[in-house]
Image (cartoon, rainbow, N blue to C red):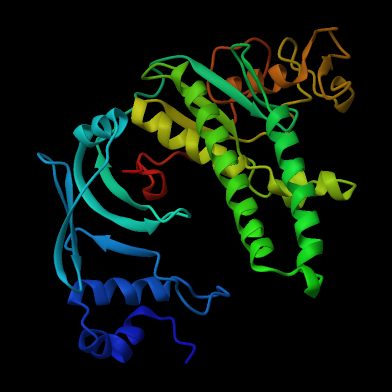
Length: 343
């Protein structure tokens, strides 16, 4: 049929879905989910997940149960919670819905979408910290903290090599067994979970070093993959998979929950500008790790220089003649549904 527009889909299939036994709210959610799949190669859904909204999901706080609307009526299911989940639920104003998913080992999880009050950051009330993102050093802060990423890079290269081996087996019909197909799916999930866990840990480490009212200045790296090029299959693979946007996303919502403002500034020439005299030249960046000003002789770590210049452009009281750049975007203060706690 090829129709993905939500309202037209509603007119076409709503009555059929109700006749199949779905409630009105479940039918509307199923139609909306199909509409969001426009452009995807998926031609069917596996019965391993379901989306609920406020009308079809409610939380019983006292006995730690979740109430779900199903085709068999209302089901009340006990939750297995930890202290972290209980703490997050106590902070939540309301539950907006959730996604019920089936894990690879047959266990069921409910990802709740919560509304949480975030403190309003006060601009100019605290210090400004710049953060430079890279591949060899994943994050360098203007206060001197460096967080390396060697283990992350090595792990992704390991998965690249392993997937190539499994892919070669899948290309040979004699070795295309069910076990090999399952191994291929597991490898993809392992790398995604490892990267997400690493980025969450990094973002939490950065935010924990800040106080409410501080400002975190990050680079506006939109379109960086189109502006830069790498030679070699390995380097291109890492360059295109490096999770700049995801790390910034995690930083934004974790900082918002703590009352820290995140601003994105123009990164042009931040690695070539001397923080002491303001001299700008490509020759100032002697190597990946060394910055040496050609005018005044100032020498320091190149990543720290970039982070310091980012903090200056975001409005810090730095040295030199660096003029503050226009702030391009201020982060949202909403907690993303995809990062709601697993219960």
